[in-house]
Amino acid sequence: MTRSRAAIRSAVAALALACAAWPVLGQITGPGHSLSVQLDNDELAGFSKRDRWYSQALRLHHFAPAAADSWAGALAGRWCALQACAASTQVSRRWSLGQNIYTQNSRSLPLPDPLDRPTAGWSYLSAAALLETADETRMAELVVGLVGPASLAGTMQNRVHHILNVSPARGWDTQVRPRLGVQLQWLQERRLALVGSSLDLVGRTSASLGSVSGQAGAGVVLRFGDRLSGTATTAEAQTATGRIGSGGRWSLQAGVAVRAVAWDYLIDGPAFGYTSLVRAAPWVGEIHAGATWSFENDWHLRFALLRRTIEFESTAVTEGRFAPQTFGTLQLSVPLR
Image (cartoon, rainbow, N blue to C red; front, side):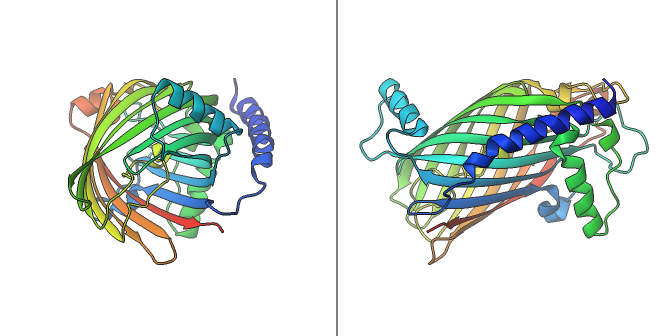
């Protein structure tokens, strides 16, 4: 398939996806409604910033209570029949819009490096049901999106670079080829109080299966703060629950996580114009540290730094050409009354 035909087909798919999203843009305010915006970017890492690999992700979440006869309420009812839920469980539904941008280690190379991860873009819509108590969060999510030129990831990155007077990334002509992405994602978090409401542990397990990737993960987070409650922990934008309140005015956290990866089309997929010689790493680990602040008006702000092992394998990685990546995540949540 030529790039022009791929672009046309991707544009048609993008239009269809936008039309599917239109009914979602109805009533978005009311009691219990909230909006969460999250930005992940390696430039937020400050002392070790590098515009490479997991270069940026932007995700917008809209939350609302779910009625018992809604799709989220029905899903929650079936889930609770299989795995008992506490009487205090609150059910909400979440609509999300997101975009992930992945680039090579150097954005200025005139030709792509076949031993580096390929340039790729992934834009998506998702619908999720969340079941939450003071000590547990469960989430089931359906994600539908586009990989390739129709993701508009290259357009987004280079327009931002133009505004900031930064040199453009040159790898978008050789990005990963188009694919329709459909993912099912599952997540469960449990909280264990250690010292009253000021110190706790949160365990997290997750899985994602579909045409973009197949992977499963687990992690543990130690939190210290004011009147801790819920299970809010740091995660990259694509897998974050979006709920960032931690019970009181502030909290500090540190954690470790690991993922087992069976496939990742954003790394393994064929690219335009050259043959990539990399494959997804079967294991990816990360550590993080972060903080959350809550304000009088029920706004919540969170910042964290994450250090991640290299997500791909190649002879360049084996020879030590590349180092692990550090990136930052910034998230704001506000009520919509």
